[in-house]
Length: 212
Image (tube, rainbow, N blue to C red):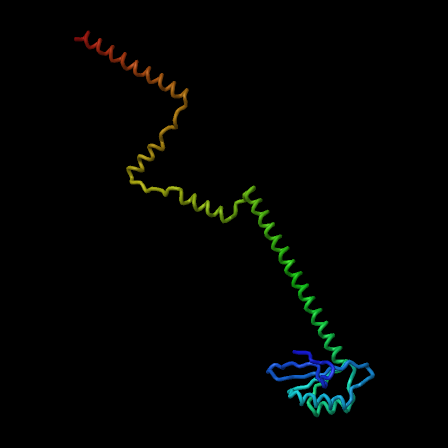
């Protein structure tokens, strides 16, 4: 787009290209609201459009157009933009800018809420981890695992043969180990028994000698 409007511009203020590269010219008139654009201005602009070899012409004014000017512009394929349309364009521009601003604000609120939620989640996880390290609470899963480990650690029962079974019963029937006092009494009783046996043997030998 290039602005060329100046003294002696012959009705062309702006030159630009459309989407496919064709030349487009525009004429801009700032009039009071009651000063309408008539057919003569449209005819002059059409001549300048043809002279510039433009594919399209746009006539823009801050006021409005007369009925004959609108009909002539329609016949000559000239686009008209009056003050009410400019106001509508401006209001639409403001509305879009405000909508974009609100969208950015909402996006910022959502991001801030997400950051707060993430920080809260991290803090809560750290608190729970600290509490579990200070006061470990066994979980049902850990109890199940411990039970399985204990079960695996216990030796499996061994099948014994009949003699081995009898020996096991004899071992099981043995009296419990004696305490210190009981052991001392048993030892004294044993010594007395041995002394009596020796004495009996000596007396028996003396008797046999006398008889012989």
